[in-house]
Image (cartoon, rainbow, N blue to C red; front, side, top):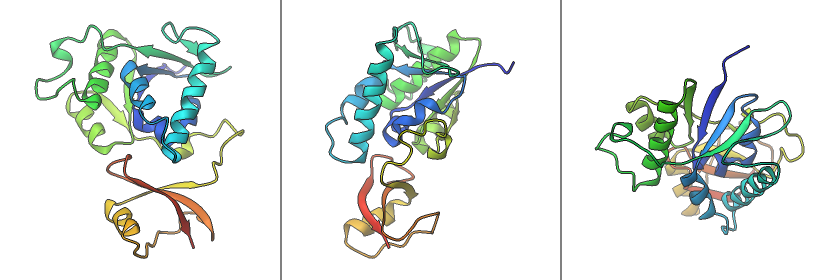
Length: 212
């Protein structure tokens, strides 16, 4: 039997696709308490990011009704568990002095490093934020990106009425400046709604842009 991996998902992953929680098969997902707090800040947004924030909160609440997130709850039959983890007990060696735990991303990385220190399993940080993945690698924490197409086993709400497309910052800037924007045809269709998300900063996006 393949050895289980512990995945620590960054806030950016949930805000891109709340269904990400179903994508890691029998492996476990650990959620830093800081991620819960960061998600809460976005729940009132009236855009796609806000919709994903509200959805993952509902998913967590449903799981909480089946058990304790503190002790770990099975996500679904045949899948791993989801468990909350705290930054309490972080050691000086868990985070270089160059980084500041007052910064949310750094605190999430430090929490993942603590989980790595306390576990015999491989711990992987998953983030849509390129710079966060680079920092994680620099401090000895394995990291990887998350792609929407990793979520394939929940057919109930696969299509959200739009498609997310990663683009350069300049394309989003041109969109807001009301200039013409052209995207590579990556399976897009005429009159389809897309959400363009910066490939360098997931918080920078445009929604309701119509692909023609």
